[in-house]
Length: 267
Ligand code: AMP
Ligand code: MG
Image (cartoon, rainbow, N blue to C red; front, side):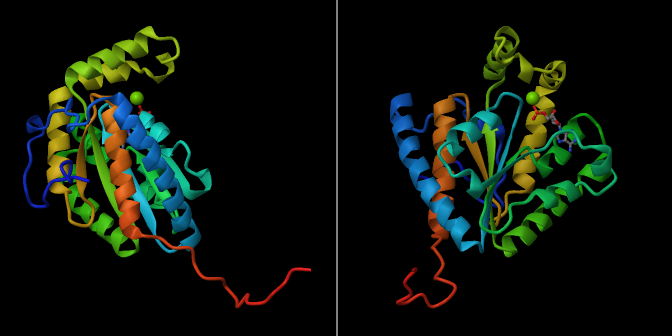
């Protein structure tokens, strides 16, 4: 598979150069869905082997503006995967207990244990995104966090966690449509907060904060992928491919039996 969503560590990117409506040459939804279905079967098998092996873990981080599809991606990519083999965690506004600790405390407690595929819906990056844009902390507090995040991610990778980070990139106009749908559709209203409109007013500030986070924290150990997400089917396909490739490269195996079982017959 092409590596077009990934960019070289050390290279500085501009988000404006990436088209959120890109479909990478994939013809249509039907073609994508076929590949996704086949990909999920393989992801399920590989995740089960990773679980049985119980030595290493995978952490998939999903970040993106409201309505970019963090929940939808999890639903599509993990449907059909044995729930025993994965752990999904969503990070909301920190609780008072969480605020009484350093910003990585709640994150570290939630990382996947050996054998699991962990998915973060939002993550440590909120502390250099919303915190920066909404001035929840001064620059002297949030700026050093890029380095802290890089060091933290290095610690995890050196402890056998493979990290993949996906930025779900949507356009401002696509967000408008999706927010409007959340207002108009009674089945979607539960997802809507008036605060989403306030965040939308800071669209440019968020794009800048994302661009900086991507550039500052795109390490060889824990690379960022920019996932075009205006088309949901392409977004799902890209994340499926990324997860499948990560697991394929890990090549997990069922471990040998704990004892010599040769010739044992159960009576
Ligand atoms: P949602 O993902 O739509 O359920 O919303 C979760 C909300 O929690 C978003 O508005 C996030 O920006 C917010 N949030 C997550 N982490 C933090 C954080 N560390 N500091 C402040 N707000 C956060
Ligand atoms: Mg929301």
